Length: 264
Image 1 (tube, helix red, strand yellow):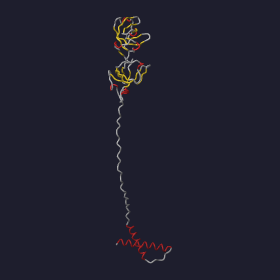
Image 2: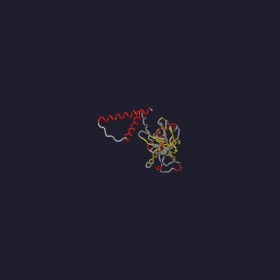
Image 3: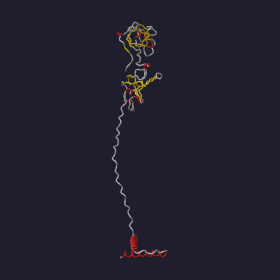
Image 4: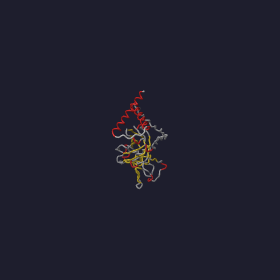
């Protein structure tokens, strides 16, 4: 896990305390102790001061309970006051990232320290671990965080947002990877079908009804009557009932002759 702590070899130290940066680590010697803390020689013209509250993370009643004059200790720079020629030190190893140093979109390495159903907690060196939500583990659907990471894994994450008041850090893994390319299936265009040639419709012949014997006899009789009339000399028109009676007699005569002809 990366940190912002800087270690400067003694051979490259500058006498100008204004060039010393915060979190720079030194190996020093305790010169003396006081009720308020300890004075430590870090190889510069100006020694550093460790306040009693910075001797260790746990509460301290007496400075002598933690350090003694002549003891070699590791210290880190907390603050520098060049005009006052004062260097404040701490024996508590500073965080790799402080709240004011965490910015959105920054990329940092961290260690997975706990898995939950909703995501993974990652130690990035800050006061509190950041959370990679399950939806930010990968581009594909993830049912359980253990499908992607495990406790103890060293991973690279991107800061999505930081809430300094609530001390919440939202991280993402998938923001550092390219989304998968979706393969579009080719849709085959239907090939044009040959036009269907319809055969010409043949008109159905209607079946004519078969004439009965009576109809055939009557038809033949009428045809013969027409032939006889065409060969006979023209007669004077018969008026009234005589004409009607003659027509009926003629029709009966035709039918009688026709039936007799059929019987032969």
